[in-house]
Length: 322
Ligand code: ASP
Image 1 (cartoon, rainbow, N blue to C red):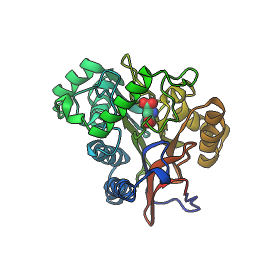
Image 2 (cartoon, rainbow, N blue to C red; image 1 turned 60 degrees about the horizontal axis):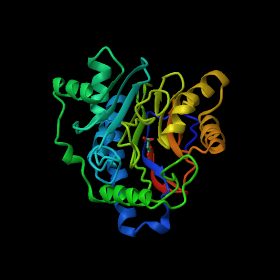
Image 3 (cartoon, protein in one colour; image 1 turned 90 degrees about the vertical axis):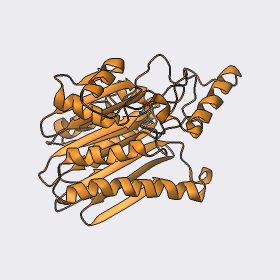
C-alpha cells in the first residue's frame, strides 16, 4: 500500500467483506462482477473527494451504493437470520468532531448507513435499534421498504444449507454452532474510510451480520470503537469479520489507541491487531484504515477480502492475497 512521503490530497479505501474467499471457488464471471462493483463504488467516493467534498459524503456515497448492490451483505443482499429475516446494522463516525451514529437490527430501511448518519446529525443519541430506529428513519424521511426488498436467492439458500447442517449433527466446532471457516458462512459486509482535502477523516460500515444469527444478535459493525472508528488526529478504521471478536478486542479503537498512545504507524498498528492479536485469539477478518497523512492499510487474516483504494494518482481493486 502507498506509504506517502508527501501527503496526498485525499485517500479512500473500501471493503466488501472478508472471509473464505478463494480464487479456486470463484467463477471468472463472479470475480469480474465483484471487481466491477468495487470499482464503481470506489469511483463514487473518489469523485466526491477529488471535487473537494467531505470524507463523510464520500463514505455515505460509497456505502449507500454498496447497500443497493446484491453482491454484498448489506442492504439488498443481506444475509438471513435463523428466523429468515434480514436485520441490518450500520455505523458512521466523523473524525473531525468525534460525532458518531449507529443503528442495529433494522428491517425496513433501504440505506442503514444514511440512517446512521441521520442519528448522528439529527438526534441527540449515538445508537438506535429496532423499531425505534425505524420510526426515526420514517420521521427523517428516509426510504422505507418492505422487508422482502432485501431478499436474494443466494443468501436464502445459504441459510437453508446452514439450517440443514444444524439439524444433521455433523461435527461441531467447539463453541460455534456455525463454523466460521465454513464456505457457507458468508461475509460481505461493506465499509469505507476516507481522508478529504481539508484533512478530515471519516469511517462507516454496514452489514446484514452473520447468516443464521439469532436472538436479535448485533455484531461489531454498529459498535463505535469495534467495527468503526475515526479521529482526525490519527486514523479512520472500518472492520469486517467475526464480529464477536471485534467487539471483545475493541478492534477499531485499538488501532487508534496504538497510533495515538504508542506512536505506532498505521501499518504497524493494523498489522499488530489483525495479524497478531486477532489471529492469536481466533478472530477471523480484516479491516481498512487510512491515517491523517493519507497512508492506507488493508490487512486481513482470512483467505480474501473484497477491497479497493485510491489516492489522486493511484487506485487498485483486489480480492485475494494478491
Ligand atoms: N462483522 C460483521 C458481523 O459480525 C460480519 C462481517 O463483517 O462479515 O456482524
